[in-house]
Structures are given as structure tokens and as C-alpha cells.
Image 1 (spheres, rainbow, N blue to C red):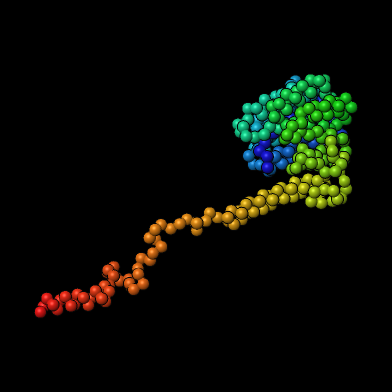
Image 2: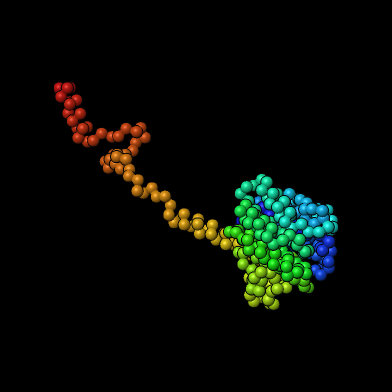
Length: 303
């Protein structure tokens, strides 16, 4: 899977107190942060996740990039609901936090939760989107709550201008009986291949289709997100294992052959001739003819 550094930006403005999401907008964001952290770190253990808030007097970095979920959980508990939303400033600070990441090989991604009115105008957001695209930063926006048509238009314009090779997505999730984290699983933001199930082109339809039809592995992620995520991870591990096995079989089928190397001169000849036998002293026996000649020579000398 992709090695990423992800900054999660939560909306802790006064609008997050509303209870139109179960149990509240802020608690729904906390559950979704847990889901995103688990998905990113399970996809690649070397991926890191940071946490920011963009409400109150201004954005604040709660947790720098880390692989320890305890730090992220502590940052959520320390966050107070207050003030208004600062979307553009929050994106810029998140971009700076990603720029100073330790592992430069990690791809940069920002995931933003927003549930309050957007004060920035559309032109300034478009300029910011082009700047972030130039810096190779992918930005996913999770918009929920009672959004005004003007705010939706601003987010869509921002998303169109920030899209790059790594993919930037916009998920608009209207209020409903389902949990925010359950619906988030059906969006391209957490999809392994970047394609959302049917009925979730730009957002989510409150849980998608009923039953197992149209869903990967026959499991509706809105009803059992943990099972759907586990099945997807298992499929990816199995696919990686099969690719590794096929690669190993290919190397075994074409080993480096030594048969074509010619032998040196003299090595092809046997060390012992056919008439010779190995002896313990290492000296070869003399031929019969040579023995007879030696005997005759001895007799003549004696005479």
C-alpha cells in the first residue's frame, strides 16, 4: 500500500455541538478519526498520522505526525469546542506540518472535517487549491451537517482545482440515522482502489444499497465497517502473497545455467588410464612389457 503522511483536521467550532449526527457532530468526528487512523496504519505500518483543530481563535496542531494512536486520542480529549471555523488557514498550517515530515518518501495528504459555514470566498479557495496541488498535497474533504448551497459550491470548486495524481476526494454526508464513520467507509476516501460503491459518486447516500448486492465481498460497509475493512485487507495480503510466489516460481524456472561454460583443457581426460588402478601408495604399476625388458637386462649383466 501507499506510504503516506496524513494530517487530520477536525472542526471544533460551535457548530460541532449539534446533535443531528449520532451522538453529536463532535463525537461523530472522533469516531471517524479513529477509523481513519486504523485504516492508514494498517494499510502501511510506516504511514504516520497527525491531528489538528481549526476552530476557536485559530487552527492548532494537536499532535504531530505519529504512529501512536494514544497521542491522537489524547489530542481529541484536550480539544475544546469554541469559536468559528478557519478552513483556509487550517489547510495552510496542515501543509506546513506535512512539509516538515521526517520521511520525505511519504506522500502528503490532508483529511478535513467541516460542519460549519465557510467564511472564505470561492476565489481565495481556488488559489489555495492550486497552491496545494503544486506542492503535491492531496486533500480529502468530509463535509457534513446542514450545508448551504453556497458552501457546497465552494467545496466543489476547491476539490476540482486540487485534484492530482494521488487523488483528492469530496464526501458530502447528509444527516441520517447511520454513524458518520460507517458512511465514511463507503466513500473513496477510505476505499483501497479509490472507487466508491454505487450510489456514492460525490458523497454517500446514507448507507448505500441494501443487502449484499453491489458491495465488495457482499458486505455492506455501512452495517459492518470493521468486517468490510478486514476483508479488504485480507484480500490485499493474499494478492501480495500470490504475486510473491509467482515471482519466485519465475526465478526458479530460469536459473543461471552453468552447462554452457566450457571445461578447461585436460579436465575432460580421466585422471587414471583404463589399464591403471588406484593404489594406496599413489604410484601406478608398470606395464608388463617394461618388466620383461628389465628382467632380460639383469640376466645379461649377470652373465
